[in-house]
Length: 313
Ligand code: GLV
Image (cartoon, rainbow, N blue to C red; front, side):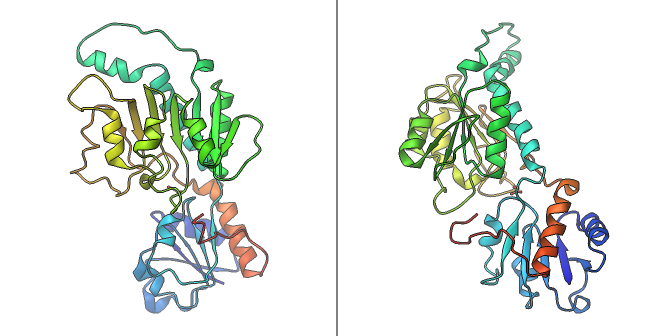
């Protein structure tokens, strides 16, 4: 089989895959088009439409990440070609650490202390017990589920939400529209780990933000389009006032447009912390097995778990 690899560290992936699949021809996407021959499989993160158009005999795609939104929205995605996405592959641990940092940021008042420091104030605040700090996790897929478990293991009561019921033991599970509002009404910090689909876009909007308790906080290591940014800014209150709106603060790693444009008002808001989509990069060593096994299985006609393009994940 001939596999084309396209991601920011093509060379490392090509070397590692060539060792795992010695009978396969593994090529980096920098290989000139006239030297590629017929490519059977593409292992890629966010390939351009131009690249996809150059692969007329493609039999399958391995998405080198968890979210398939960029691929499914690619206008040159060939219809009917099976897509397999990474399922966790080491990302959940990294994202759990990011979320842990964010939950502690708010629970231990680091946002308040940053403001105090700017005014040279020394004023320790009461510590609220972890048991009294419920955390909500929207999205209980391969990553959301593990993140919810990790936060629960740290001692926080965790409420999880998914569209359809998920029977998980370590957390309180909710589902459906009613379940969403039940969860929102009782969490101090809300974590977004849903895929970006037609059903989830804008799920954090004026109505859902209003359902959170006064003083709640938001962490988004998931996807930017989940949040209506205008509603978010309104919920955070006036950027020039020390008094927050209903929402106390937000830690954001994903945005509708990435890189976040210089002109975005999110950059300047004092109650927003911004990170550049770094919460869960794909760790090659841990993802390699999944990618190699998937390519091997697809090439041998064995069953693989494919993405449902209609559902969007
Ligand atoms: C990163 O955002 C991913 O989907 O893997």
